[in-house]
Image 1 (cartoon, rainbow, N blue to C red):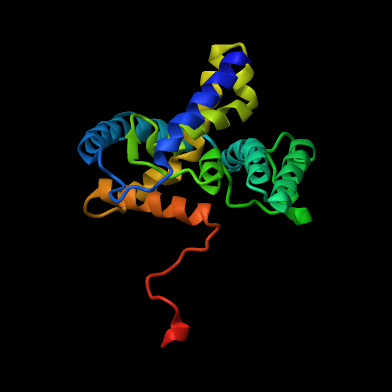
Image 2: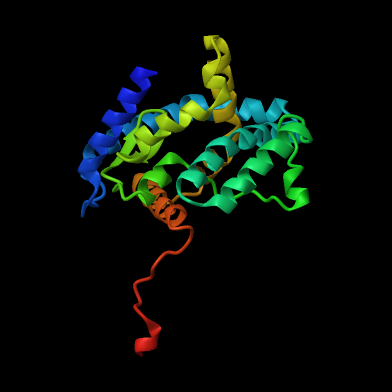
Length: 232
């Protein structure tokens, strides 16, 4: 427990360096592009064949159930981070979804909660919580295997991992197996989207990631560049 508290303390201390947003969100572009090239090689040589096999041998209803299962597990960090951000109503919604889908939805395989009015939210993570608390995003990062993130979001994902029930399994095979199935099940559509990107894929993915993070952090309240229309 002491080690965990120490890690969290050092984490928050290091993040104070990014309290102000940097002008250039991608000062490590040269390094990031090298990592992206590596990731693209892994995607084309490993990920695509694995996902193709998975989608071929797994019927659609089962695939949907698997996606629902992992989506239900995500309601745990959703609820915790909603509460940390002061979104009490959203935290109650996420908690209700988890309880209903875990019980009536057979462990989350079926989304029963939506049928009773508890609809899935945009999702909340600790990176968004840090942003609400005033921590700047820091430089953009492309991580091996994990993909796009920022200095703020990367360690925040580690904090969220403590809310994953399977992370507490004492069997390494279970932890690896569950994570592998999660990645395969949830990233099939991502691979399809890569196929329709024209031009510089690195820039496209970077800009979409940063814009999406801004959108979810502000709950969709993105300011435009046209000023106040009442002034005209």
